[in-house]
Image (cartoon, rainbow, N blue to C red; front, side, top):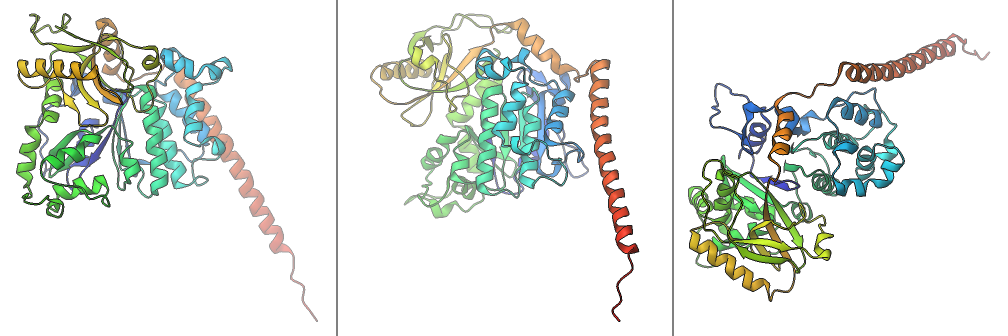
Length: 461
């Protein structure tokens, strides 16, 4: 889901780090472990693409930088060594956002990352011992942001940070994901309710099994249907993690019986959340999924789909879909931080939430059920007042553009000989200058120390 933020939750040993390593292609098979199955990115197998071009992986244990480069030089070097997001890759929205910097001849996205991560004031400090651990974590986040990655994976990246710093960093990553239309998946060692609410989706693990995967705002109502009631004094992430570790009896409603791990797995697999995920995974057509937060005013229509890109089954289908037929000026210009994308004419509505209620999935279940749900929602929207949260799907319009995009991930990024030589020489010159300055300082210290100790002590008579 482009532009989305997913929180990976679960007790220690549930498989969070392993899942992130599998997605990043860094998981290693040992004598005590077995790696089975396949990993696909859209419709491509991991073996068909170069993962270092597609995915950025960050762990709290890999937070190291070249100590002789300043913060700005570190980011410039990271940008030059990757296929950075340059003006030629900007979307129309990004060009509008960075218009001033483009006119000034600056690297607009680099300046934006420095500003939004509060690194501007320390941009000339060395990345070694001169910056704090928090700033070092910000620098790592900034390095990832400067690459053109489609997926960013964070495995406990802010360990040791306080909750305020964690909130600021997660909020920044969310803003970057929205701008770049990249997906971020993150596991955190400590959470607050405010940090929890920054995420769009939740994946809840226990003992290697998925207990829940779906919208963040639906997690609490989902477990309420299973007989678990969250007290107001308990934070949401603690509540759902307690349930999957077997401590959920304290939250059981009157007369309800706590479910076992196997029962929780089974409940999830019969839920609409699971069915919608599997529908997307098993679909023949290549589509992009977005969540759009907007005010009422959309022009929607019920129609039979007329455009399918499936090469396997090109027969027309009889499903009735809820399609965006008109976008008002107000909605077209909204697309705030709560939206992972902008709604467009022709988008197919696959789920909807009105006035912060649970998501209603329109594309799961038997054909008759889907038609009835779409018609019911269509009639309700005519009188509905308040906030609307849509999950929409958009077919990839340009097949050639799609294949060209994936072709760049099938080989590592290689700079031209001239550019790579210039990048490395520039870096070495900067490091050499700094080492030269340090050597001079050290020689001065030695000389001063020698002069200081060559002066004879005064002896009082």
